[in-house]
Each structure stands twice: as structure tokens, then as C-alpha cells.
Amino acid sequence: MQEGTIARKMDKGYGFIARDGEDKDLFFHMNELQGTDFDSLQEGTKVKFEVTDGPKGPSATNVTLA
Image (cartoon, rainbow, N blue to C red; front, side):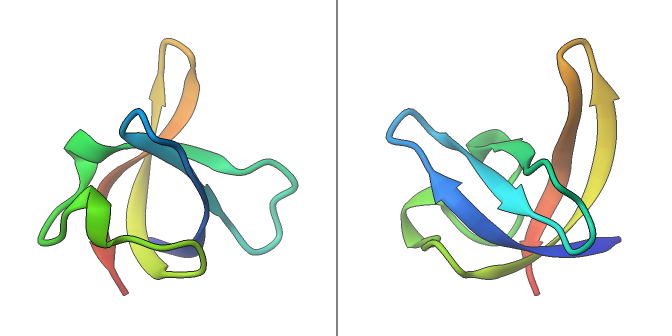
């Protein structure tokens, strides 16, 4: 699993994770959260996740609190 921090959270149930050493933030959807809910996440929260290549590019899956 990789680690990162919540960079931005959008009102529509998705957001972006900042990863060390990467220029582009990684998309995540609230359906991929494990053991936490979208409303409890805040920008700067540390998370662990897996990266999956989807039709629109890479995204975070199995997102958990670090």
C-alpha cells in the first residue's frame, strides 16, 4: 500500500490524495473508503491506499486512515 495525504475534498463525494514524489494528485471516490466515512476526512489527513488504473487514469482504491 502507498501513503499520502488528503489534498482536496469536493462536495460531491470525491477528492484527491497528494503523494510524495508525484506531481499529480490521485483521484479517490468515497465508495473506496474503508473503515471511515467521507465526512470525517479533512484536508491533511494521512491515508493508505492502493493505486488502480481505470478508464480515466489511475485512482486510489481501498483507502484507509494511516
